[in-house]
Length: 69
Image (cartoon, rainbow, N blue to C red; front, side, top):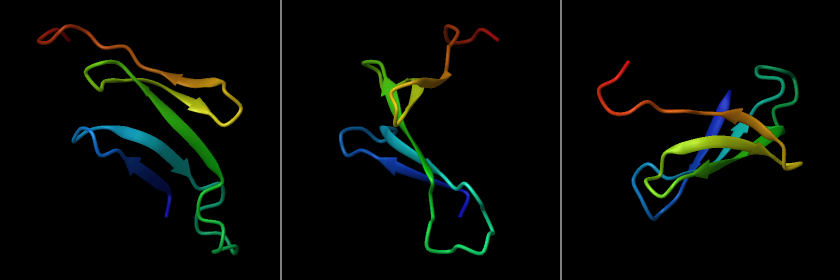
C-alpha cells in the first residue's frame, strides 16, 4: 500500500486524514503507514492544506473560480 485516506461521515468528499507509506514494498510489512497528515477544509469541504503530526503546514492548495483555468 502506498497511501491510505480516511474519509469523514458528514459529507461525501470530507477527507480527514492521509497516511503515506515510508518504505512501500519494503521488508517490514507490519508498518503500513509511517507519516500521517490531517486535512484542513473550508465550509464547502474544499481542501485548503495538509498538516503534519508536528503541526506544520506541509501542502497548501488554492482554487480559481469555477470555469477559470
